[in-house]
Length: 616
Image (cartoon, rainbow, N blue to C red):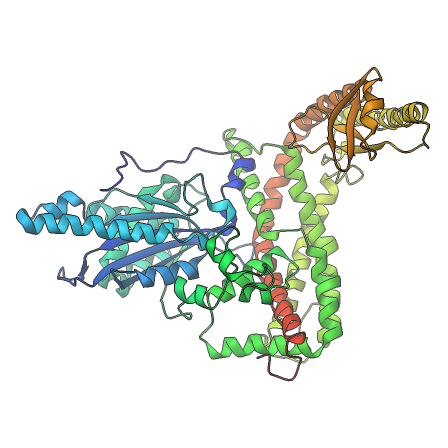
């Protein structure tokens, strides 16, 4: 029987920090509508005991290529017949759409509707609907391999499947049209007119019914505000645009590593670096590159020109071993630990919250100002420290370019992936320089990355608090020196044995700093001293604090809280500006990910077959 919902699923408003955790790292939201019969635009329907009609709506983040690009989400729609026994086409489509966060599942008829025929025929129809929905739900819930850690969303299963109530066809169609009219840019917008004139949609009413179910699942999907207007793009998807791989095929060729702790992992053996095709090929230096490689493997190309374009780039990198290694180590290596996609999600969330607070005085606000400034700091790192080495190495590898990154040899960018990436990254670097200047004007780089605070010269109130914070550093050095002298006196060992360390902000303690002694036997001597509190004893030493250190930490927390309150207006305005650079970030992320994957494939080819051509 269906799980019933009395109302559409509603998500409470979150702060910028909480909203980032729900961004699901780019995961797709998928809505699936099942029909026992294939209904045509003329209203005729046919039933086949072996197949079912499926419509799928997939919403995924849109990687923008320019600041003026307003599109935030892509909507892809699919419609096809599927085998009732295995739902193989749905299975293959999930492989392509990964990572998948939430799946909404609905049917064109309820059990009561099916039973309306009466008698044995009605009972058989009702049982058929129940069986089909349960079987499809089981297929979806078994696909733990298409999820990410962030997409769990609190569900018991790895993939979050929600059954929706059946909407009337007229209600679903009306909701789809009214929602898309706003989200595509208005009634007279080019995108909405193209949607209304789409002949494929006219011939497949199941798609609009599925769209209605999607928008009804969560009101946030159809929010009608000035910010959401024109932020969607809708397009048809086809099952044959990429090589189709269902779960059975992917597992048979060991496409991706089996999940740790699973039966498949025990049977396959090995480790993450050699028990799958992904593990063998993944020598990526960045998180964006590893994600892109997984997408490439899940969606193998069928377009010959695109295949040759990638192979040409890999061949160039295989042949130029020194340049390839420099690109990976000196260039892409600077991006290790910097997740540009995640940075973009945080800037979007913080910028939206800042705008709401600034313009309407409402909303949850930007949350922790230190985390907001940390995002701006990372934006500066990308523009000032990470991109220049990548471009310097690529310029030496490619040659033949002038100062604005254009190709003097007039090579066709569409035929040279490396040249295209270089020119695109040159443009991104120049556009991000203004963001870097903003960061330098706002952030106190003398305190970063230990503390993320605003430049005190922006406000007299901030300057007074900053003077007190600077005084704390001097007091901290004195307390550290006293701790070393104390340990020298009671142990007879040399000075500078006591290490001063910051306490993890996520730990359940009120301390800001702590001392550590490498000698785990030091606990006995420390416990005999008044004013010393031992926190814990680990393999790497004894962690403790003194009364003076804890008091100074409390004082710093109070001053940092006061500083955060006084700097909030400055941070809010800065984050509103910083969020406008997200489209540039997204374009840079796509280019860097592609470059990283190509270099990774070339590295694998060079060490597994050489440059002779067998690697192809």
